[in-house]
Length: 556
Ligand SMILES: Nc1ncnc2c1ncn2[C@@H]1O[C@H](COP(=O)(O)OP(=O)(O)OP(=O)(O)O)[C@@H](O)[C@H]1O
Image (cartoon, rainbow, N blue to C red; front, side, top):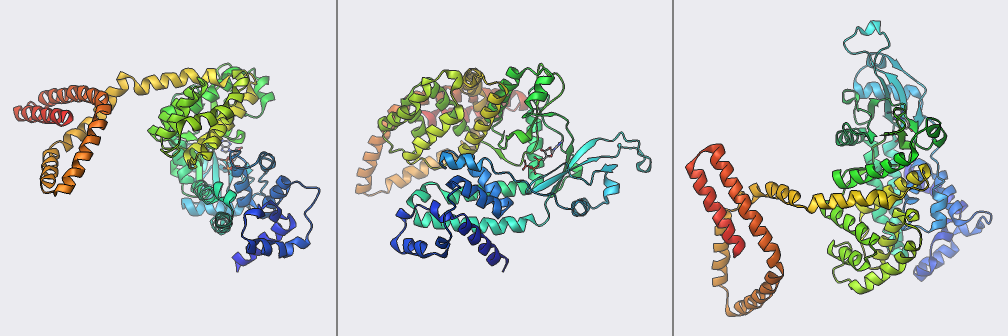
């Protein structure tokens, strides 16, 4: 019944803002076109004073917080959505009234199993902030170890974030409706299919459920705090785990300056250039060093510490959305950015193919020509004016024409990069992102692929290789006996395979030489370590035999 009512409301809003006029009808089957043409909403004229972006924005606002949040997420996808609509969706504000504080307090008491008066020395019933999913109250803990009945006001100041009661139900119902709409789009529109609406909704589901569970947010915040422990660049408020559950999160209260408050930052004589550069450095450190990045970097979530304005430190809150990249994605992304800024489009195209982001059958020359044609105009500007985010958008949308699948982790990264860049340029308009990022990326590449990294990798892999070594003779023997039993046809096939293998082997010869050398050194080191650590002659013998066998296997 509730779903029917919701559907009715959606139809009403759809009709009121004539969203049917946004549907590309020319791609629909005739029957659907006729149905759309006969639909009752046509009786309502398209509001002529509103453009299509405005109509969509107003419709999403009328449908409530979940749709508003969805629209906000869509506004960060200029690679998928036309510019005029993106511009309008960026204006979406979730101006949600707070929920009653007695409900918030009841939920806190229920989650933490104690009365508010036993949990906090002070609790402010008036919320500090309220949004679609949660609201935040200020509070103060009891000074630890002191007599609670005699509190002296010296306890820690904290904020208490509480999930809106009953929000899960609304979210699930609205997600189901969004999914139905996405399915219709996939089924009936070629253009719609390209937008990958099901993936977008699925991504949204993931994001919104991540935000719903404050224990996930708290663990993300703790991980980021650990990654930036003692950092001059970023401070993360501490999570008070003892008072944190899935619907309530308590963390240290901070008093930084909101990053969008440029006047306040300037009034305390902040080094704006350094502040902007530190923003870029934090982003690259999170993406490349830690592979764990805060992916909701809108200005409302970023503050600047009031201490030391000449060496300003950021403070970040709200870690509900984080992203991470695999090692391969990190490598390809770094190489892509470096190749792009060296204007080596052939290399950019080849990297997209090697990484599997576009199909292996893509013709590298055609692809690099397409990349050149969209990217060359970007280099017409001085380097300091080039937008990194736009570069990625251009690259990915060109790649999409060559059948690049939407890669959610890269979309999140692209969105965060756009935020960081916008923020950096707002703080310091002359910010030269590339000069700030290039030395970082080059250093990172050296560290990742240099001899130290090779040795580290060897140390990591060696135990696994040694563990598997005893099984290898058995496996080889099994494979050989199976080969012996093959009939003549299969043997002919084997010959062909062998020829192919030889060709491959030639290509891989160089790599094998390296592997051989590192393996030999590794096995030697392992033998010595065992001999010294355990002092057993058998172990030495076994290890030497193992190392010899491994060498033979690599040689084979
Ligand atoms: N540790 C903190 N110290 C001081 N103020 C805080 C802290 N955490 C949150 N706030 C205040 O509460 C507001 C909302 O917090 P937060 O962004 O975590 O909530 P949210 O519900 O996820 O909001 P949104 O989704 O709109 O970003 C912040 O903008 C900030 O003003």
